[in-house]
Length: 268
Image (cartoon, rainbow, N blue to C red; front, side):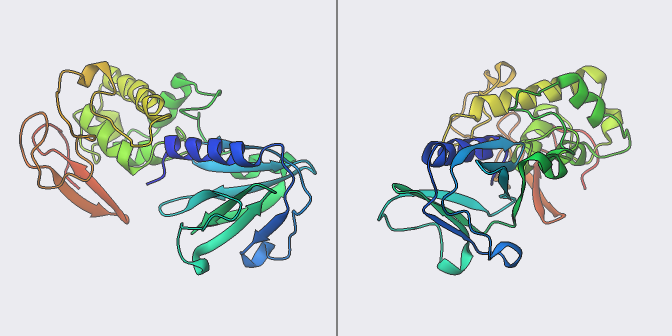
């Protein structure tokens, strides 16, 4: 499931494959941009902004993509077999003389002027892995609607950019609050720690191929386990802190996991 750390890793792979190179193949398989041809364009670089990917070209254009739940970019050597999915799931092909980047199942793919990038990312809050990270602004935005559920406030990219469903569940567990607790009911020190922990988790995983939250922060280092995650994907299995079976709820097309004993607040 792509979250801020995964998107940053994707941007780095794409940048390493394409930056400074001239495209020999350009194929955007979405109706609106099917006739657009970037062949011959030099790629300036690929950057991540929250969960958004921005591939910039020398002529002042940017290819904006978003992975959401199932999208992926794969990079292949020249002549290597593509293995990211069936052909009908391919939405973009960008190739140089040596490497080919293939975008699968991309729900968002659009070409815009680089000067207009703020139209697609300007609404985002501080990026947890970006140079604009500002914990005070992120905290203020998360707490701006006291009646809003903690989980929803964390997932809202206008508050802070980079948290997805996995981190939301894990962060709520660490804060000992259910995702449905009104954010205004969090004591200020807990809310402040929630924001700093979000940053710590994404920083700890920005270089890892397999995401982990257990042991990723000093506060949790006392829990010794081989499990990579505290609650996410562990429905019915014992809580690593208290042993109570982890529960799962499916809401808004997202699975939500929590410990009914360790976490206080409403349960859905």
